[in-house]
View 1 (cartoon, helix red, strand yellow):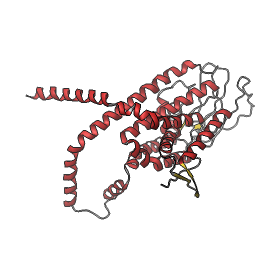
View 2 (cartoon, helix red, strand yellow; view 1 turned 180 degrees about the vertical axis):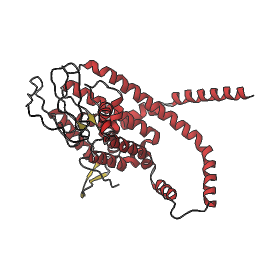
View 3 (cartoon, one colour; view 1 turned 135 degrees about the vertical axis):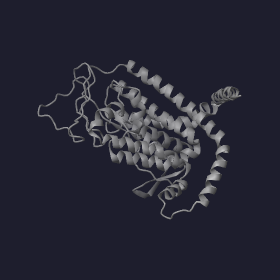
View 4 (cartoon, one colour; view 1 turned 45 degrees about the horizontal axis):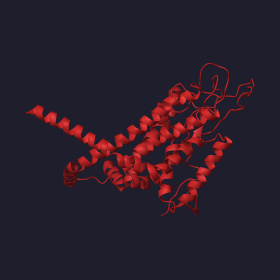
Length: 361
């Protein structure tokens, strides 16, 4: 089975902050000039003697002022709230997906007759050759279930990308759509940053990989389980990034869907290690999915150990390891044990219908 993917796609930006003496974490943006780079100051800045960290810039990154101030490294206490948020959100994601699947299956029979009637009426209704709605329906029906599933995710990423283009939204975007353990807002950016891209190339690359692997991952997990895995992967990979930043002292905001997409890629490559992959610009060179996954993990491990700052390698590794673990063990431990929750939901729905029916007589 042939696959196409970018060689440098699954990435997540990591902006490296700097330390300076002060009493709170401050992030500056240049509101008036939109997204232009902040000009260099004439007064030279001294590097931090404690960490030896250097200013970091990336063409994929929001135009954040170089200086990010905080007195000392955020302690491990800063990870307590993100840890419980990760556990709670993951549980809610899988619980909601289980209920969603139950409700969907329950309504399929009822909707079948409605859809049959709608198709019959559609045949009786005269059609226009240039009807835009008809063309959209034809295109939508031609997509696989996986492609239809990720369309909403891609649309959300495009919407957030457009918000980055509004100068008055920059401060809000940096606060809530970039994740940083040194920020005053810790939990909500763990999810929101997964849908956030500043660079058009970064967003297009990530969404291309997601679109390419969507059919395989949804056929493996199903629509509802995939959504739970994808959203949980974004939060889990961000938490791993938080842990890495706190323990290494390399701080700065991160954004991008790469952590969650690494989960998708790793899950598919683990289940289909012999599948053939190719670089989109070099289709003549092919390699197995298993070897590709090993190379990606090796590169991100080297980047994490050596302190490379262009990507958030910790988030990549967190996403990849979660994807490998989930398709190997997590599916059996989590998804196949959803029956008690679904049963409790069924009983609650039955009781509520019984009360509603009793009140009507």
